[in-house]
Length: 328
Image (cartoon, helix red, strand yellow):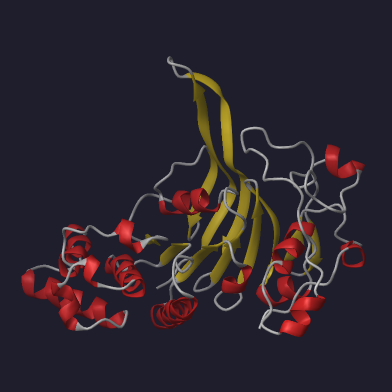
């Protein structure tokens, strides 16, 4: 089985408090009115710079962070915290208990959810999980510190699979790994998706990493989605200035092309989600912003079927900014 995920006007706000009496000072709008859909068995890549709300959105989908407003639907039904949705965390060292063997770590969710009964059946499931992620049977007897970073992330994937989920949120699941190991983990996730029919929300700050695993890509900025498109369409024809800036930051292995490229350098820092700008939230850093961008929230525009963007300058953007870089 696999499942369809729908987010409708999802918002996650955190109270901002100050002083000894913790008086309310307003709210931090970490996620602000996000609407997305992930079809069954597909991967939605979610990209944006640090602090834009990606991880908060992922934690809301898993049920770790309660939404302030909006709905999360799994196959058309409201999300409840259950084993159908699991998470792979960024840092496997921090997310694994150093005092538990790998076998105990994988056995715990199997027993707690009643997925196998009896010691022999649970141990057999542990061995099955290790095999699924490419680890030897002897790994069950070892501790997390005895493994490399890539191997620990394989354990993290096995733990997510232990509950037999249909949806997995991958929160920067490869960003802490060496490039060669990243490729191995991405290949493993793709293989597991094909074998088990999994649906992924793959969160990253690197568009290059999403190129190889995503079916669709959503670009997030300061709590809002600014562009959504099929992977090939987004890389070939981005229609939001922020997306173009992210693409221009991807290194190109050809030194001749790299020297000739025109980087899009964004001015200033990411504004505070406690006090987001009026109008288009990106206008304070956008190189092509106009007066309308500063006063009016942009409407969603459909550039091509399935390709939507929230930008007043979407129609003439290709003439205003350099072409995106083709990612190998």
